[in-house]
Every structure is written in C-alpha cells, then in structure tokens.
Length: 61
Ligand SMILES: [Zn+2]
Image 1 (cartoon, rainbow, N blue to C red):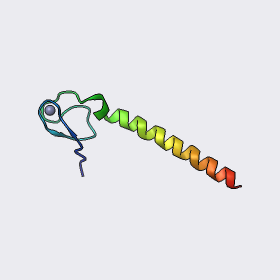
Image 2 (image 1 turned 90 degrees about the vertical axis):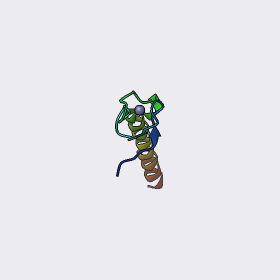
Image 3 (image 1 turned 45 degrees about the vertical axis):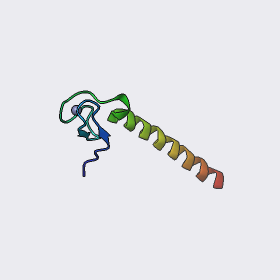
C-alpha cells in the first residue's frame, strides 16, 4: 500500500511518502515532506521511547 499523504505544490499530484520529489513533475518536495526528515523524527522518538522504557523498568527494580 502506498502512502499518498502529500500533494505537490506545483502540479497537485498526490505524492508518495517515500521519495523526495514529485512522481509526476519531478519537482522537489517541501522540506517537511522529505522522508529523511521524518525518518530522523521517528528515530529520535524511538530513542526517547527506549530511554523512557529503560527508566521505567529500572525504577521498578
Ligand atoms: Zn508535481
């Protein structure tokens, strides 16, 4: 299943999440639409979640 959550600002094409350009007109996405940004955000959230879990577990011992 392809996630098409962004719309191209130039041609209105529904863009896939995975690529950093529009699939129709190949213009570059907005910065907030770039997958690398979101992978970074997800990675940071994941690390915070792990740290939170570690603290939770160690506080119960
Ligand atoms: Zn486009």
